[in-house]
Image (tube, rainbow, N blue to C red; front, side):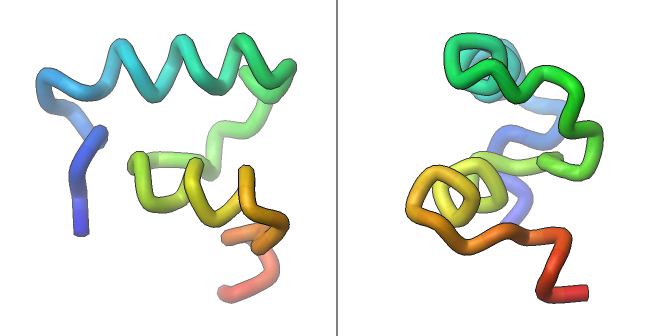
Length: 47
C-alpha cells in the first residue's frame, strides 16, 4: 500500500508526476495514488 513512498520507487513516482505535469500534487504519495489519479480517480476526493 505504500509502494513509492520513501523507497526505491520514489524517483519513478516523482518522474511520472513531472511527466504528467502534476509535480505540484503533494498529496500523491504512493504509486497507487498516482495510478488512481492517472485513471481518473482523484485520491484527494477519497478523503
